[in-house]
Picture 1 (spheres, rainbow, N blue to C red):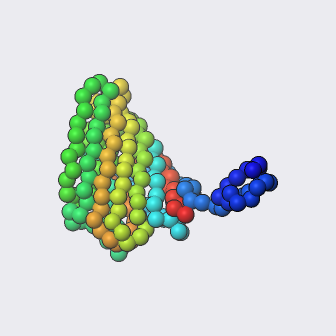
Picture 2 (tube, rainbow, N blue to C red):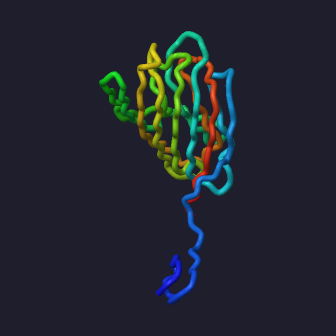
Length: 193
């Protein structure tokens, strides 16, 4: 047998072309934002159930040192009951770590409390079953500066579930102390087939 072999191994020679498959990420939307403590995304693309969201952001000046929380809307309204679970682990460059035990809540915390203005973050959130009527699951990772010094870097990794069978029509990210979020996001759809 010779040639390039794909999904058909019955031929004895030549080039055999493989069938198309899933696994590709497709850019659905990209935007910059400023002037609000809330970033809302309502565009998820067509034909995607799973999504990846990438943020590059910081906080505006102001009082308060909150984290960033992620909420889901189904049927035109944001869920406010405790149907989420979320847990995480913080690692700090100065040593030490902190556990976020699994809890029942109405949101996922994707950026830890204690973020200061001018500290930049890169946050990646992966969500399964965002646009179908199945229980949703997600993982996130946030790297950035934490606290009152740019050298106090951290890594937050976490995972969560949403025990709600509704189809999501929007998601929002909220800074918990009300400060403005400034930055960019990209949302990608993931094709399973």
